[in-house]
Image (cartoon, rainbow, N blue to C red; front, top):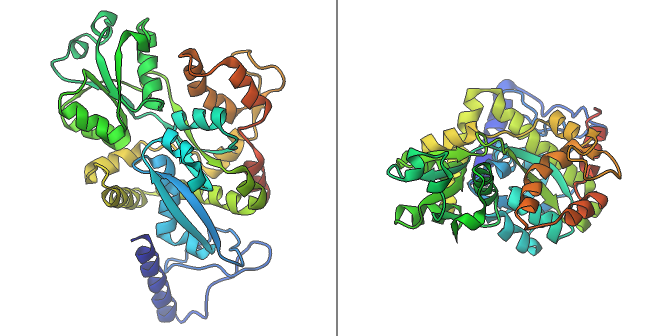
Length: 383
């Protein structure tokens, strides 16, 4: 479908050029003077970037149902990757830990905080980008639940059973809610199901509470379940980001940098107008339908409106601005803002005993949250 949309855009471009009597596409302003594709409105489909002379291929670990990955898809549907001579091969996942474990299948991959923690601690993947600050990571109970009637009472939480994807940000949000009540995950029973299946199980009567995110969270809300907390209300805004295989980064720095720039420019395109956001929501819905992921038109629109991707300039800033560690645990150097943002969720996994402060220091020592790509983007864009 993505290629069909790109083809239709290309045909529309050709007809527009013929009808206007144009002699061809305008020249790129980038060094080298490469030609840039145009749409009928005069928009540069290369977004000011220089196309590659030979076809480049990227295997992309794609998080179905979470906007943290969808900037790539939107750019692809607009025809940007075709204009830049890049072929994107999508490898879909619905959970970050599974994506990390299947790392032989991708060159770059985007995931949430649970996947980020595993990627940082369990593998040697550089984290080169932050693609979203998720707030719609939500906790639900049934309307007749004692928790719905008195959510601040820790006694009604004790001994309850919760269904959620283990090792993900849903677990971190649940742990955060429990911690604020003076409880831990040991005070409840956990049932591990992936994001979509957790709602299916909850609908079938499994568990007293549900942890889920994005489109599935809105589906739970529309089913009449009571939202008793989420990342936004709990003050636990978790970043999502993109990893890259070390060898792929070393051998393809400009390609990886171009991919990241395009992602953030796609986010900027979405935020430019209600029309663009509506189109993005439709593409999001189309992809969910293709992958069998529970969604509808209204939920797609609401999900996209919660997307909090940095702009290109914001991405570069958080990867180049540094200050001392807020917790005072790390004194070898100042920390990048990106490192601090990721530590919001990673430190929570440490508090739950999943990782240690020694692990924390090790990945900071190794500069695993790597500014190389952001610095190259700064150079490429002349910022």
